[in-house]
Length: 264
Image 1 (cartoon, rainbow, N blue to C red):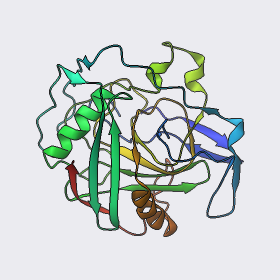
Image 2: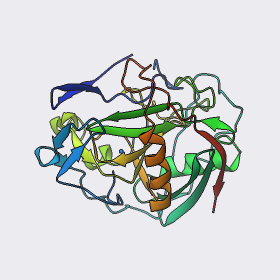
Image 3: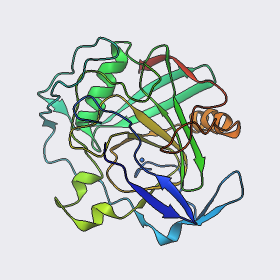
Image 4: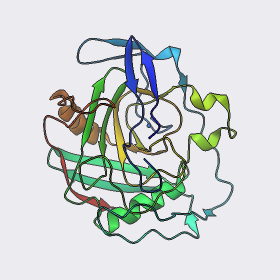
């Protein structure tokens, strides 16, 4: 499995957020709620965010609908039907309400940013895929402060039995643009997809950015988190993680279970 890391403030932070995808061996957005001049960890480490780029503007959709592909991969952790592939809307937003054991987390998904991702996520939610599933990874180091969910197995290796390609912000760059290797700030309040770094390795795992985080622009941004939801995630983060994951972070010290995921 390909791994990537960056060195920030003397600390090596893994930016690979999915241990395993369905289709291979294997986050803020324009809708993020804030972008501060500096980020500070619970341990008091600080990071000058002005040294990093920002996410590019979201390109205007070329058409009102697109076609998506979701090729089969590893067996699904939880049985679901792949989402429809034709006539997928690029217009409007979709509210999703995550009720968790730690409190509510409201999301607003943006089809213009990532129509195929939103199409998949809402399909999974409507089929109950995320219901009664854990958020298996928390990272609290300065420059990478996210809560990761979406694997029903809780191992960080599972998915829905299919994969799909990365969308915005990667699609805002020309293919093979060297800028794709340069970290940018994913603002607090971003919802983004985890992947293994391999093509087509998006599946069901996603991460919630609760403080401005620095990542290459290779993780699909597809929505934003409500302020109430951010308060829930920040409460989880305040209890820390167990440090059990070699790629960074670990299981939240306060176990977090998505009880239901409802599309509004």
